[in-house]
Image (cartoon, rainbow, N blue to C red; front, side):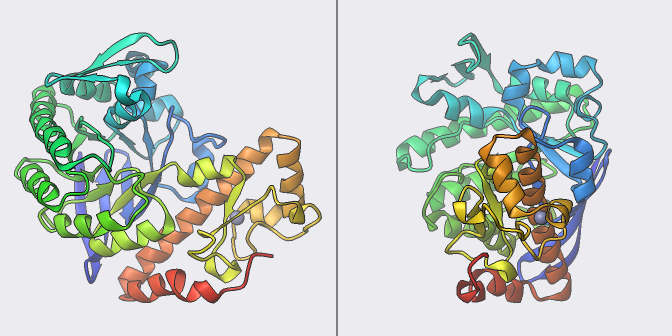
Length: 382
Ligand SMILES: [Zn+2]
């Protein structure tokens, strides 16, 4: 079961509601990444308490451990991780290619790779990725694509695109054959090349997918690809949702929402939390120069009695001081990871909620300017 309804528009930005067998998801939305069926440091109940309506788990990791068949026997991903709202799985392609680098051995039928856990040999094909995702049982799944480096040249990117198009058709056939009620999204690739992105978008749009993922953007340090993505999004049907794979910096979210993207997944807020970075709103000194964050490891916080962000309403900011969290960091208490992750995901939740409100009120551009321009002269974090 899957549907998408656009509720408001403000320029190309839009709000909408995705409905799945596990409830509704208001968009634009950030989807926290539960890599191995867990948000590192948080329970599913805490994720729900913040307000999140969906999470994304990684097919590659769950296939290796505990194994997709084990998850199937335990009732599927929702039951397994005690999460009663919408779930996504990626196709496993990104991890297969990025974790194995030049060592993975790709051919037209599929890809051979080695487990990062025990170096054992494995093979993914488009059909296999779909079968694994059926066993895991997320509401929304993605077609298996060949992921390349964003900096690869035109010829290499074109070859990967042709293979991905071929694999996409095989994924769709495998999915349709199964009769699974899960929603399968096609993925647009094409690297940083406008002509290849256009070719990819047109091809994927010609197939009966209920939604689309935009891949191959993660890791690009330049803004070059933003214009390419903006150009190619118009070749996808307007009434279907678009998911930005691996995208999640505050700036990128504002840009891509402005182009008409609906959902985002990224490990940034949770990974940075564990490394000691906490996000701060513009009113508290967050800006594009400091990337809306500060680092708790800074010794100036040792005796600081204020919260991580005085303009944040999360339970961490209501109850704990920077001085306490600095102490937890220094002595490596497990509570440190949990508090930091909670705050950062709360920051992203409120950011997306503010974005949705601004689109409904027709003030998205003003909000974007407030965050990305005016905040440049904001005060530094205390
Ligand atoms: Zn907070």
